[in-house]
Length: 129
Image 1 (cartoon, rainbow, N blue to C red):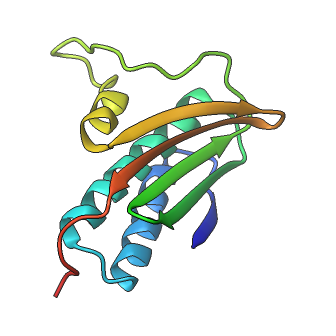
Image 2 (spheres, rainbow, N blue to C red):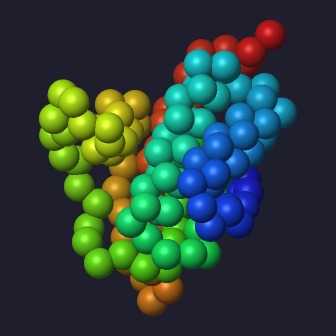
């Protein structure tokens, strides 16, 4: 199963990504802890695409054999995504570190239309009540 959404071209993209992912994963009956983690990853990827990329920004959600994969594609980025160490008082710079902590695997790839950044979180737990 793959679902795709076109996100807004501004910082509301993070909220939109979070809301769409939460609604879909709850509809599927996945465990609430997983729903929360995937929604957080989706919002971080969307925010990074808006800050560092160029529209259009597309969110893809895939439930694969034993994981949920979330991917965000944007059309312009000159630098490769990298986990950085943010200063204690920095207001940003922790998103990919957080994704690194939550995902079993994550990465990025370029294509002729831009870049996709993705993360996979393992299916776990029982369905939510």
